[in-house]
Image (cartoon, rainbow, N blue to C red; front, side, top):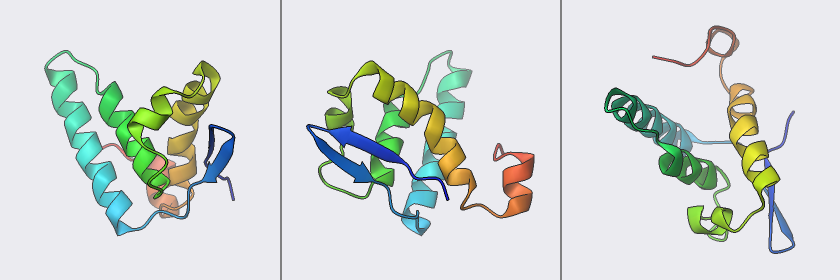
Length: 99
């Protein structure tokens, strides 16, 4: 299985398997992103807030992620959806998660 990791201030954090709480946050993020898209906006802050919640650790906050380097931001942004896909039923992962 693929891991989702981030290193902040010399400490590496690994996201545990997501639970229903994170699934609810995912649905909330998708709906917010869709609404913002309709308004011609991006949901970047909300996306990184969702990524931070995946780590289930008080040290991994959106503000803490702001202090990470550019490469870390790119890695998290491109990696979290692949990481989540491994926890979704195969049919869902294969067909995408858009609603």
